[in-house]
Length: 579
Image 1: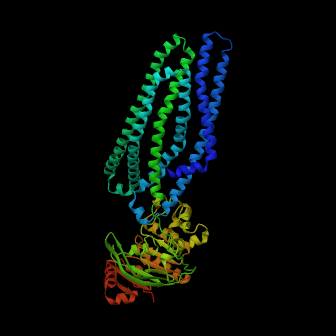
Image 2 (image 1 turned 60 degrees about the vertical axis):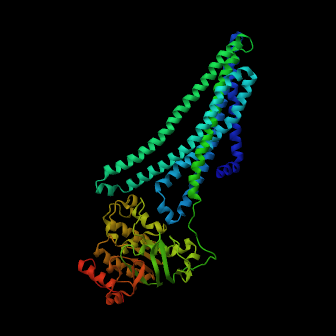
Image 3 (image 1 turned 90 degrees about the vertical axis):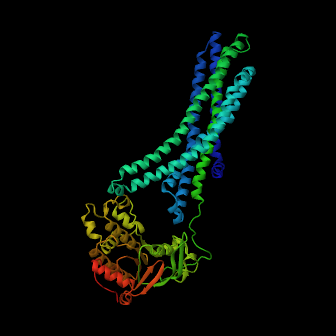
C-alpha cells in the first residue's frame, strides 16, 4: 500500500479539507440526539418555543447534507484521479511486457486486474478513509458523550457494542483470504468468456456450443460458490451486529428507566443515550469494514503491481549505439536459440544488403518465425549474434530498431475500424493517394471497389468481415504504407490464391526495386520465393541450403524437391527466377 500512502501524502491539503468536512459532519451528527433529547424534556416541562428545536434540527440536517456532499465529492474525485493514473500506468507497463510473459498470462486475468482490482483500491480511497475517520472521531466522541451523560448506564450497555468490534475484526481477516480467491476465479471467468467469444466462429463450425457452455457453466459455478461464501458471511455478520445493538438498547431501557425514576437522568437524555448507542454501532462495525476494505485493496493493489513491476523489455544494453537513419545491412552470425530445452535455431548465419530479397523456407517448426522475433528483439538474442548496419541490435534502442522493420505476421490482427484506418495504422498521417497505392500493390484495390463504403468500410473486430486473403493483403498494405526499409513477411500470402499471389509478388518486386527496399519473406510456397536474391532453407533449426533460387533448383536438394512437388500439385505458377 506504499503507493496509496504516497498519493495521500502528496495530496494532503486536498485530503485535509475533506477530512475536516467529515469531522464537522461527525460533530453535527452528535448534536442531533441532544437536540432531540432536549426537545422531549422541554415538551415534558410544557415549555414554550419548543418549535425552535425543530428548526435547530432542520438547520443541522442541512449542514450535514452539504458537508457530506462536499467531502464525498472531494474524496471521490481524488480516488478517480488515482484510479485513472494507476490504470494508465498499468496499461503502459502491459505494452512493455516481454512477449513470453504475455503468452503465459491469461488475458482475462490481466483484464480483471485492470477492472475489479482497481475498483477495490478506489473503494478504499473513499469508503475506507471515511470509515477510518469515523472510527476515530465519531467513535471516541460518542463514547465521551455517553460517559458524560451517565457513566453507569454506559458501563451497563457497552458490552454488546464491544463484541461488535471484536467480531468485525475477525470477520475482516477471514474475508481477506476469501476475497483474493474470488478475484482469481473472476479472472478465470473473464478469460474463458473472452476466449469463447473471440473463437465463436470456430466453435460454431464444429457445433461445440453445448460443450463450451458446459465449460463456462463450470467456471461460472465456481465463481458463484466462492461469492456465495462471501454472501453467507455478510448475511450472518450484518444481522448479528444489529442484534447486538438491540441488546444494548434493551439494557439501556431496563437500567435507564430506573435512573429516570430515581431522578438521576431525564427522559430526554435517556432517549439521546439510546440514539448514541445506534450512533456508536457504526464506528464499531466500521472498524471491521475499514479493515476489510484495507485488506481487499491491499490484495488487489498487489495483483496490479505484479504486472506493473514485472520485468519489462530491456530497451538496450550500454553503451547506446546509433545505427543511423538509412538501412545498409542486416547480418545474423551463428545465431542459436533454445526454448524449454529444445534447440529452435542452431548456428544460423546470413547477411542481407540494402535492396536484397531473402526468402526463407522450411517445414513447420523449423524456427522461421522465431528468427523474425529475434531480429525484432521480441525475444532477446544472445550478444554479438544479430547486427543492424554492423551494430549489435542489443545496443540499439527498441524504438529505433523496430523503425527499420515492417512486419506482416502470420496471425494478421486488424482493429475494429475502417479499412482506411487499419492501413494507415503504421503511419496515420499518410495521404489518401499513398493508401490507394499501397492497396494497389497489395492487390486490394479491386476488393475495395466492391465494398459499399470503399476504404471507409468497417472491418469489424479482428477483421471478421474480411476473408483470410483480404486480411493478409490489408496487413501487407499496412506494412507498405509505413515506409520502413525492410519488410518482414511471415507466410504473408498463405491465404491468397495463386493468381493473386503472382500479381502481388510482381508488384512487391517492382516496389522493392524502385524504392530500394529489402525484403525477408517466409513462405511454404516455393513460387513465392523465386524472385528472391537468396533463399535460406531451415530444417530443424539449422541451415540446410543457402544460395540463389537458381542454384538451389539445380542442386537437387530440399528446395528443388519442394518446388517440383508443388508444380505437380498445381501450387506453383512458374519459374520466374530473378536474375
